[in-house]
Image (cartoon, rainbow, N blue to C red; front, side, top):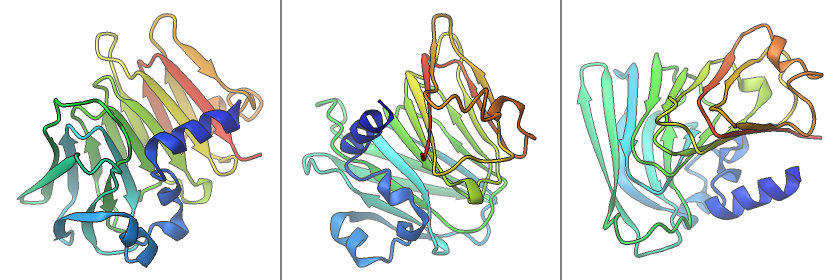
Length: 236
């Protein structure tokens, strides 16, 4: 069951999740560049402390880069899907808006827009907007993701997971689902989960109870509020 779900996620994202792995996160890698198209000039991050990401792309992948700038790539296999990225810097805050041109034409998800986050530690990365799917890899900052009927996939490396991840939804504006995948069991992570009425948790390895994620030390905390379903997987 776990492998089937992960395979489906990977097919939908068309390699979005595999790009999250640290040894593939360097966007200077030629194979990554061959598969994607840069859609905005690089943006320096030296004065930035707060990052806001919004827009209406069907799917985005937020991943850690080994570079010092924000980078933006179009990994959508449907070449009729084109995007514009707007970056507005105001003091120590950057607002990144990723807009899909002719977004009303179809709902196909054949790939993702990649947002590569610089290596530095930011005070907060906040994600809002009308994204249908959000893929988050392990990054060096606290992350807040707000629900807008999005499905969120967390692809997390236990040894690098040192910051809180907060998914905030409400009963009237819930996540359609959340999948959490750990490359190995994280010893100190605590998970706080709150489903909407009738919601379900799929935890085939019993990581919450036997693994102890509900009783973790709380450094960091993964908090998920108001979602229809939660899937939790770990490398066997």
